[in-house]
Length: 209
Image (cartoon, rainbow, N blue to C red; front, side, top):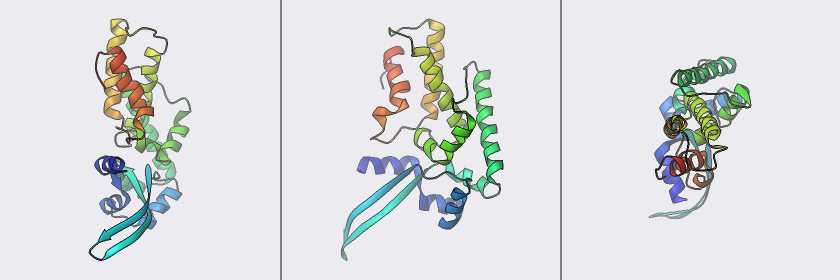
């Protein structure tokens, strides 16, 4: 529990911190979420136990919600736009990032499920878990680079690639490293970071995790 809370305190905003930063009431955040204009929390921590102080011991039972750092800027936009407008902005930013990566020589494809699925995952809080700040650009980069890394390595039976593919793989891994979250301690072993960043660096790029 201590390692998880340290991770959340370092990389995320608690709901009270988020509300304070954006000047929102809890009820307003809940309304934006129910209207499909703002993501749900990426993590919920159920707390049950006791606190002891000079005044004695008091039982605790509650839930803490945590959001990615990029949620604050998104909420500012969400206050002034409807769900359709926000969905269109998300798509524009997502596609613009794919175009930017393609211009840099990094082949990209959209998510297999398409932008509707990406938007649904975004609203569910999933991308706050697996990207560094939960921003549309990081979501696009993560999906595209995981797909590219998998394509470069899926049929490879030995830890060596032709030099052009190796150079492309190195760029993809470095970009994914920048876009992806570190992941909570209990998630790291099963994460795409473990497979596509740490694992690929060990097997193909001569580097440690």
